[in-house]
Length: 527
Image (cartoon, rainbow, N blue to C red; front, side, top):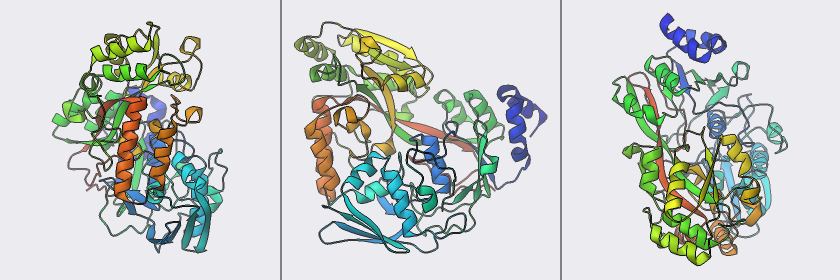
């Protein structure tokens, strides 16, 4: 690294970071891949938090029984084969040979069962599956069995879900850690090994190639297929400032940006030394508080939905047409369960209809408290536009600006808006979290036990339970569409369109990047 570049990095990040990173950067090994993650890795337990960066860390060092391919279909990963009894209640799984943890111990059925039991205590999809489970036991060292009280249709979707929370497999002794306590060891059976002695929160995380990992023979796709590691070492270098991230990539100090700031996308795309690609996708939505006025009235929720203008919202927040699209499906457009049924709601505003509904509901102009996270760059530009659209639809809006941490804290309050509560907030969900209605939290309608906003609708919960029990694709497709229609009927939330989050990496230096909805870092080569 030139002295000029080292000075530029030091001036932005401070001498402490340069000193911490210098030994790794000085190695100059072509088999070291350096990545700037989308955020700082603070929590290492992927079952304890839904943070995307912790999920990505999980994929580095752990493996999964099943995964989700690039087309949204479930495929085997650690599992070699499985069978289902004729009554649909008993599922038996056999692990593929050669699976071993980083400490050299073989992966056994007991490890799998302990890992699943801990995961199911924290993950909503796991909780639902285990509530239907009658028994889980080991058949042999390499096979296990799940026995349900009645046929359960989303077993594979539960075991192969690509995101929050992923059922990663850990050694039994680690998986027996209470679910409300973070694990102390970080040993998996995945393609990389975590270098705990080099972990510096706020600075870097280091992973080494697992030389004993045996990848599957299939081509990699999504979180499935052959996890072939072609570099010896991966370093996650934490750089918080967007301009510093871009400078580090262009100057060759790092090899890849996991998430390109939208304002720098065009310049990086035009740089002939950089490759950009639209990778992880997601959905924006406006969530209502169903507990308190005025959104405790479905007519008022419908009025707000009618006021939304997806193109205006996406144009303001993302600004790059190739990175966003309007979409009225509650599941990602183009995914297996996507549907165009949205009743009378469209991606364009219908202000006159919105005002008619407000009049019918007896809305008297009381302020709607809209939360605005000013420091969340993925969301920050949306609330002011939402506020303006709501005003055009007949609402009085009181937008409260604060940092994202304060939004997270305030949205958990169930008090009336005028007493420190809230009425609506804007949020973002990754595509991988919205692939089915059992996993997608905004579709929950179990009242105060559910997700923030606390929608309550018995019919919705019945439909979601039916989806979980459904045994064939046609039935699930129909139920998913019924759930979408019901979500619109009850005004669960207002969909605000979809976006792609671009990645960028050094052209001619990095190859084999797997572009998809989930960030994974196997298959990558450096010459």
